Every structure is written in structure tokens, then in C-alpha cells.
Length: 207
Image (tube, rainbow, N blue to C red; front, side, top):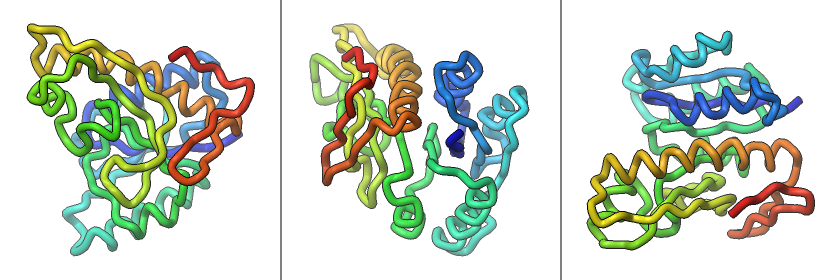
């Protein structure tokens, strides 16, 4: 069974959707560890509530990003993980980390990439005046939300939307497509070819 590490910095609602999908049998993989750069991250509590090992590595304890990531790599490799899933991990990863886990880091972003990368994707969408927004799962490369796209879900932007209301509706879709993307990966059905991800026959896609 394949093993994943989940990195969190905050509440960890996407982590919870992954945990629920594993416990229901939808996802046939093991969450080997949940790690965070913030000891107060509620995602750590979610993991402990389900008996999942946790690790805390405070980035402020390390002089450079590379030294922090070297320790993080050492920690995750100690659990023998096959993939790293980012679930609200609020650190920009350097090439050191990205290259070590080449094509083995998955992320979810609250916008339809390549539009509105970086932080506050929901606010960016509202400020721009788009009619539709949504979320995207992708493999991580050295850019900011520029890696090969796996799945996307569309959410309409309503006239009276706020960042919070739009974000809430997008989050529901995040909780759906992140486990689905991990399922496709765990079944070996994601083929990366340059910028494109091909979903091999038998994959379950709804959108």
C-alpha cells in the first residue's frame, strides 16, 4: 500500500477529507505522517484524533529555507512516503525539496489555474470580476502553482459573493477533488508528460 505525508499549517479541512476517504475505503493508501511548521495547527489535532503520527518542524528554528527543508526531507523519508500532499502548507518550497520529490508532490489551489496563482485566489477572482472560479489539483514544480494540472472543479461566482462565501463553496469542491486525485494517483492512473497529465483508462472522473 502506498504511503503519503500530508503537510499542513492551519485547520486542515482538506486533510480531514483525505482521512475520511481513507477510513471509508475510498482511498486505498496510508497516511504515514502529518507534519506542520506550526505547532498550533489544528490539522495536527485532526491527525492525532485518528491515530496518525505527527511531526512539528518550526521553520523559524532553521537559519535558511534549505536547512529547514533538509530536515523535513529527512523526517518524511524516515516514514518511507511515496508522495507528499500539501494541504494548506503555507511555505514556498525551494528546488531542493521539489527536486527531491520530483513529480511526487501534490497540491490543491482555490482557483482555476493558471488563473490567480499564489495567495488569496478567491479574492483575486472576485476583484477581477470573473463569472466562474473553482479549484485545481496539480503536481508541484519549481514555480508558484505552475505544475501539471490533474483535476479542476468549477464554481459559479454569484453577484453578492464575498471572499468568504465564494471560498466556502470552493472548499466543498476541494474536499471532493483532492481525494479523487489521490485515488487516481494511488491506482497508477496519472501519467505526466511535460505539462500535461493524462488520466489512464478506468479513472473515475465526473467533471
